[in-house]
Amino acid sequence: MSRVSVVIKALNEEANICAAIESALAAVAEVGGEVILADSYSSDRTVELASRYPIRVVQLAHADERCCGAGPQLGFQHSIGEYVYILDGDMQMLPGFLPQALLFLAQHPEVAGVGGRLVELNNDSLEYRERGLRAQSHLFPGEVDRIDGGGLYRRRAIAESGYFSDRNLHSYEEFDLAVRLRSRGWKLWRLPVDVVTHYGHDAPPYQLLMRRWRSRYVCGLGELVRASAGQPQMRLVLRGARELVIYTGVLVWWLALLAAVLWPAAASAKAIAFVLLAIAPFALMLVRKRSLSRAVYSVVSWCFQAAGLVRGIVRPRKPAHQPIASRVLHEPPASPPAKTTTASTKHA
Image (cartoon, rainbow, N blue to C red; front, side, top):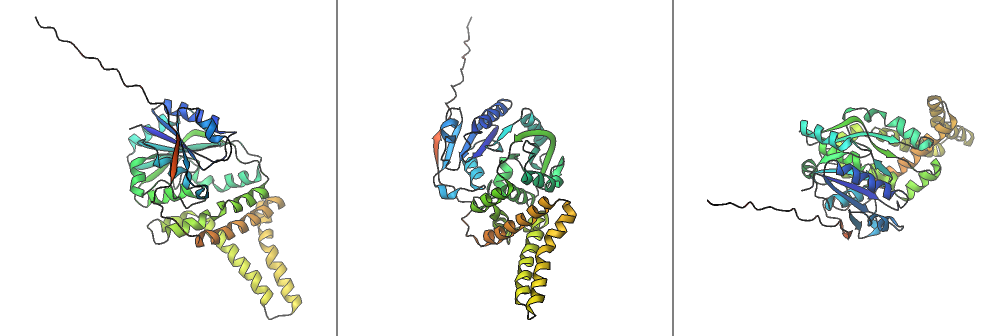
């Protein structure tokens, strides 16, 4: 069995995939292992470029199964490593992390997965600045409640949790894995080590919100809530996904706006009540953010996420344990057999 399997999940990453693969190959060369590209039915040259490298290239059999949860699980299905690392196609692994992570896991058998610091290169985007501020609580070194941005996991722990990644999730797949592991007594850790670089989307923030609505990325939290309902990890979801409170509050806000229109009062009174209710969240965020653009973006983003929460909760599910239909497009060349020497014995 290979020691480490690095699974690269990708969709239309022809601009980045070569750098991602080369960084992964260099990383596994330090410890021994394999690299697998899990392609979500790319329509560009991602697969063609990846097939030039000594890696396994696998692809979804059906494009309609594309989602953030399907890619990691697809790669896991085709991996054999004792440990599994997940890497996005627009990331590059940095040298030195895997040896330190393996040593830490060997010394701490109660830890299921270990991550490091994600080095975000796109700090100009409003979306990524806001995300970075929100994520500070679980990015500090030490024990964490999730490993965002990729981590190295024990295969044994993943097997105990049922599967690597929920094929139904359009986001929150790493948090889902974390709560399933933690509900079974495993711990997660983040080392004070840079592990990958990432350059996020250059799209303007509101265009990115529309893209995430079309791709169902905003449905991930609702899908996670539905998947966790009645399961041991549900309490950890409610405790860890604090944004649930915000998005539920947005839904209540919408109901209040609707109620204001239906109040049995004079039209002028209803109009005043509606306007005051409508501007209240923006005013509150303006005080907190001290920036009109950040305040408006926060509220608009919440509205997208709240609608996605409802959309995700009502979306039908496929069994998460069920194998994902796939095809193997490229295999690495077979390693040459090891030479054996036969000792001869001389008799006197």
